[in-house]
Amino acid sequence: MYQIDFNHPVHVHFLGIGGISMSGLAKLLLSRGFKVSGSDDHDSPLLNELRSLGAHIFLGLKAENISEDMDVVVYTGAIHPDNPEFAAAKNKNLPMLSRGQLMGELMKNFHHSVGISGTDGKTTTTSLLSLMLLDADLDPTISVGGIIPEINTNFRIGGDRHFVVESCEYTNSFLDFFPTDAIILNIREDHLDFFKDIDDIRNSFRRFAELVPADGITVINGEIDDYKELFKGIKSTIKTYGLAEDKDADLSAFNYMAADISYDDMGRGSYDLYEDGKFIAHVSLGLMGRHNVSNSLAAIAVALKYGVPVPSMLKTLKSFAGPRRRLEHKGTFKGASVYDDYAHNPDEIRSTLTTARRFKGKRIVTVFQPHTFSRTKALLPEFVEALSLSDVIIMADIYSARETDDGTISSKTVRDLLVKNGKEAYYFSTFKEIENFLSDFSSTDDLLITMGAGDVVNIGNELLGL
Image 1 (tube, helix red, strand yellow):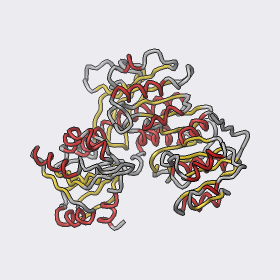
Image 2 (image 1 turned 180 degrees about the vertical axis):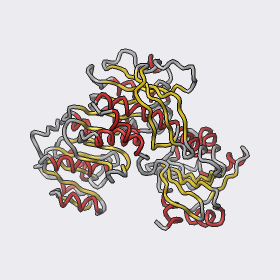
Image 3 (image 1 turned 120 degrees about the vertical axis):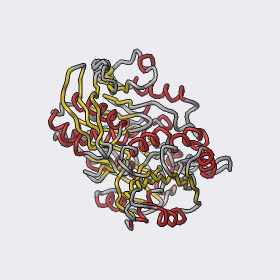
Image 4 (image 1 turned 135 degrees about the vertical axis):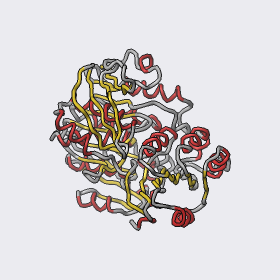
């Protein structure tokens, strides 16, 4: 496979350069003196920014865009072999890398490259760890799957000592990475359009852990089923974390533990932090929910290894309220508090709604847009169970993403099962119908959550005039 070396800049061409992750990688290479070109179907502010930095941009993916002077061509998962530009690069025998392979190659150029993985919680934990390093003046380079409000971007170019990378398991892309340290937050059923079953998913996370060298650490959630057996024999040092929710719990059961956990009226957690059974500090989080108490422990484990001072770490933990679209407060509509959340699998929905139930005296109204037909069909009972934590559920049509509707599953199916289970649930085929319904339905005691990985956020934005 082609090797990227920061010390020897070459010409890199990106297919689909306008994507948020691809444009970030392009900016990183431009900052290191690489010649960068790329193509995309539509112009955008991101492309204008790349032009201003010296990139040559083609509009439209065409065979004639490919030239012999390109040293390597990088493509996204959305580019198929029949794409004319992809085919032209193949015909010219140019070296080619997927986005994940390029990310992996870049990780080799940093003293510390930490990969944050897990079915849920990756973006929040990556953002939190990134800000811990930033606040401690460690100048990290950052690649995260969401916008961090404090820096208003998902990709930050910093120094070459620390690279913090959100590491997604879908299509096994994280197996192309080269982490010196890793976090594994959880392992649950998801992406069943790619993975065969939970055992297939667990095997991928095992292989990811095997990438970490002997002098690195792999931080593992102690709630993962049979984690000791799953990760037995990996080269790196295992650091575990967990929650002591029983007052008689052994505070040395895991390397990092949260004890005496409490939550305020907004669901923000506080706890006593223990490292190997020794009290370290009292932690107050700006993040909401039990799941984020757990996520914070994973970030703490790596931050302490990288030398983040405890006072600085505590300040970041208290101030960070989360990346965008993670139970993000958007405003008030007819007295109802409007939030938006990216949750799109049953475990994420359960975590978000459990957190929302900690809000005092609020009726929870959830507008849910399922993400992909395959996920909705494979996990239908789990979706119904998780959504039932809401007082009222409004179903929008399934966001198809990369899939085609085969007619075997729909949001009406989810609505009907919710109603059968005694829930107040509705279905509307358009966002406009949902907005009209909410205009009449919403009250001052409501906590209104738009939820999903598609474009459901636009409903709240429209209601609020954003």
